[in-house]
Amino acid sequence: MILRSLVATTLLIAGAAAAPVIASAADAAAHAAAASAPAVSATDGWLRVLPGSLPAGGYVTFSNASDSAVSIVGAESGDYADAMIHRSSTAGGMGRMEMVDAVAVPARGTVAFSPGGYHVMLTGAKHPVKAGDAVVVTFDLSDGKKLPVTLLARPANATGPKD
Image (cartoon, rainbow, N blue to C red):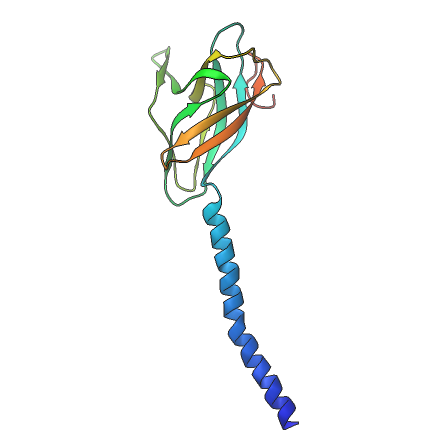
C-alpha cells in the first residue's frame, strides 16, 4: 500500500512537472504559427472593368492582424502594364483623383479600397479582361512583404464584389 501510494505520488508530481512543458510547447507552436501567418490579409477583392482600353479600378479590404501599422506602398500585376495606388475625392463639387505613395493599414485594423476612395488603378491590359475573369494584383507592403490578391473582374456598372 505504501509502495502504491509512493508510485501514485511520484506520477502525480511528474505529471504536474510535465504539464508546463507541454503547455510551453503548445504555446511555442501557436506563437510560431502566428509569426509565420501574414500580418496583412485581403478580402472581397474585385475589379471594375471598363470598355476598350480604359483603365480598370481594383477594390479590396485589407486587414492587419499585427500590433504595428503596415502600409501598402505599391502594386503590380502580370495582367496589366501599370498598377498605381490612387485616391479619389470630391471637394467643392469637383471630383479629383491623385496617386498616393502609401496607404496605412492600422495595427489591428482595416482599410478599404472602395469606389470613391482608395483603389488600385490598372492600365495597359496585356490581354482582354472581361467580367468573370480573375486578375492577380500583388501589393507591396512597407515591411518588405508582398501580398498577392485575386480580384474578380466585374462589369462597368458594378458597385461591389457581389452586387
